[in-house]
Length: 198
Image (cartoon, rainbow, N blue to C red; front, side, top):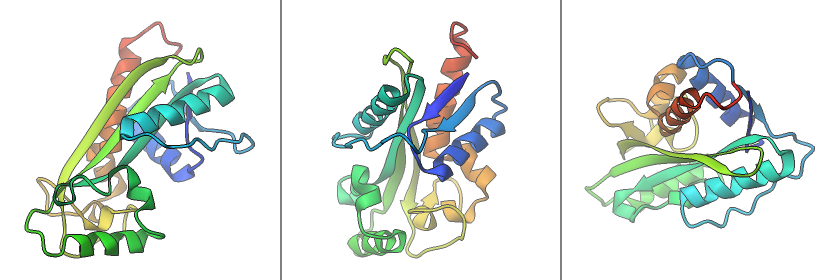
């Protein structure tokens, strides 16, 4: 079974493939959307789920294949859920986004946060056949730590550990991340629906 990932970000496709391998998922080929296609969806949804649906539908319109899209971001309790769906556009660069976040909560005692990932799976007929949401809870560290990962990983302390996501190995992160938790639900759906072409 081939599933088109609604992204032209090779890192995201590689991460999804790594998670599939980690959980011994075979028979599914995860492919990026062809760069020759004009994949440029307008992400004007108000929630992660709405943006996920927009991306999956646009990828399906262009390819007429099974498509999977995710939309994800960081939600900080003291900031009323910000940066949320604007996580990737919170500032111009990854470091500026981290600096802006740390500055925004420097006087807050409540540093609870969560990474959220919403996924949408669409069949070749353009129908939504499955949706899933994964959440990884933690808190915002006082300072950066770790060299792995990307985005806000260096300041996100994962609940139940003394590590930021950037302190974790790829395998550690891929077991507990928001994207992994959503993707595991997608895997379960595919495995439990034998009518789908595996």
